[in-house]
Amino acid sequence: MWQVIGQTRAVSLLQRSLEAGSLAHAYLFIGPAHVGKMTLALNLAQALNCETAEPPCGQCASCQKIAATKHADVQIIGLSSNEASAEAKLRVEISIDQIRQVQHSANLPPFEGRYKVFIIDGAELLSIEAANCLLKTLEEPVGKVIFILLATNERLLPATVVSRCQRVELLPMPVNEVETALNRNWGVESKKAELLAKLSRGHLGWAVSATTDDGLLQQRTEWLNRLHDIINADCEERFAYAAQLAAQFSQNRGLVQERLDLWLGWWRDLLLVKVGSTGDITNIDRLDTFSDMTRSYSLAQIRAFIHSIQAAGDQLRQNASPRLVLEVLMLSIPEVEKHSEEKSTVNLR
Ligand SMILES: [Zn+2]
Image (tube, rainbow, N blue to C red; front, side, top):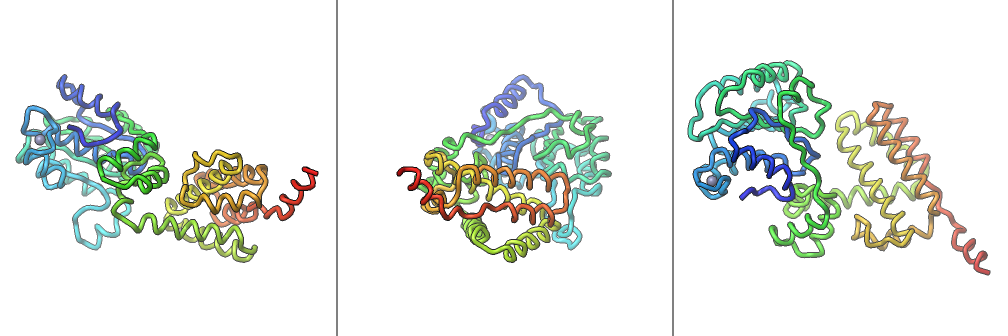
């Protein structure tokens, strides 16, 4: 039984190759964060080393060791390695030394299983030297050695590396399937399962983490509250917020993009409530806020601001000045239409 949920196409491709004995020497699993790339990679490693007639069984000693990442022949290479050295903690890319160790290990026969499997987590973080070193290994495949590269964006990888790998794409699941999986496989009660599934946008791994890590939902609450405050804040406070985000951007781009995505989701929900499609909103626990807010903004205002958030996201990705982009975004926050209700009353008369 493959444990990965909702990736039928990828699983059947790998299953067919296993049965036909036509596995590639290197795979590239491409997909957004938390979509199931690592789970699928560990599943493939299990399938290759399982001791039963129906691999991956998930039960035998080999499968269990691999699931616990304690199998001697299945190695995970990435930024968060087990090394405790100060150098390892400061690492921002996968170094050539890490890949040299892989090369050395790949030349030794399997220690306890049938196949050696090297999983490179976050392959886009390979330094140029490390990628070139890996390329040599991929060009001269050794029997019983499989490489699995995990990446969210293949354009950040050298084309020479990509061309040596069989590409397997993992897509987000339909939200209702995430909800069912949370309910059935993780015993999450239905209301919470619905909220987490919607917030996950089909990334099951995120939803599963959020069932045990309250911090994820807490952070979302804090961010949403802050965004709500900013909508009602004066210009000075908005600019201070833009400066704060811009400073964060230089240290952690992903975190700022995540906030913009959250904001985008918020205004999209407001638009949906405004046009009466309440059932389609993502932030279902904030429905009351949206219902209150719809009276303050016209449809055109909401649409225009959604475009502004999208444009800000695009500009940040294209390396525009974060301070400038975020300040312009703050200036685009729509003004509350104080008279919208009066106007509609007048119109009715
Ligand atoms: Zn097994």
